[in-house]
Length: 335
Image (cartoon, rainbow, N blue to C red; front, side, top):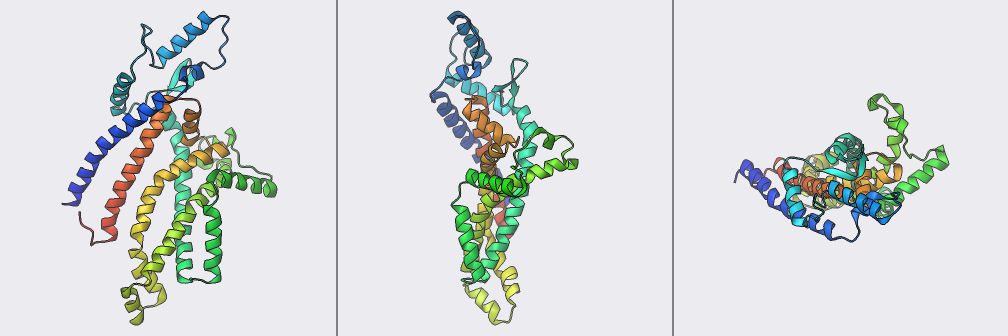
């Protein structure tokens, strides 16, 4: 099968997988305990029960849980409507975030706040990838040395730290040293962002926390892969022919060790977005992670469904791109 045919087949596989994911998520979210209408109403001021019931019914109709005849709409009917809207790239309206008495379109929320999350994740991913490669090469080529043992201990400590705790620790250290917690305010997001120095100031700590979170695992993987490859026969043969140690590592071992690394990279990209949910909530970063977390806390079902649709789709697309990248790294792989 050609690469083009492989890509078409994999894209077609994504369709039934996403249907199953959306059906499962929609079912689990709707059968979960709690009433989202009560959360939507909040501390509404009503003098009697009839006032509250009228407000409840109006909110339920606006949220699409009841029709105009005050009958509850079955969940399967709402699922069919959700899928039909999803095919038009319409995620619906938020139940929690409202404007002028109506829910804000989720597509608008994503468009407005996705750039903040993308900037944070791209910068941290590039830095963690470069650092993990350097750390892995140093540890593998200087096995059991002082540097290898020190980096191993540091990485194990970093791997054992929960991401939100690491963010809190960085916040505490920054406050003690610089009297700066990193919690953002509106001055940091005055546009244009590229010419706003405060934006870069408040970007430092979230980027550092997210970088350290993704750095440890990739560095350990790079080290283990290089150690395994450096024991292969073709590496020993290259050294016997007089190839320098640098040439052996970067011309022979490094490229052959990239396949597992590419696999982890493809799987970790959606994971970075999930990790940024915690980082953004700690530092008040106005990205998608903050809104996704609020959707879960305040039973904003459309926002929760959008989250549980975007994350699996990103993962499936990342896996497809990873498999395609294999062909360019290792010519022996054919589809």
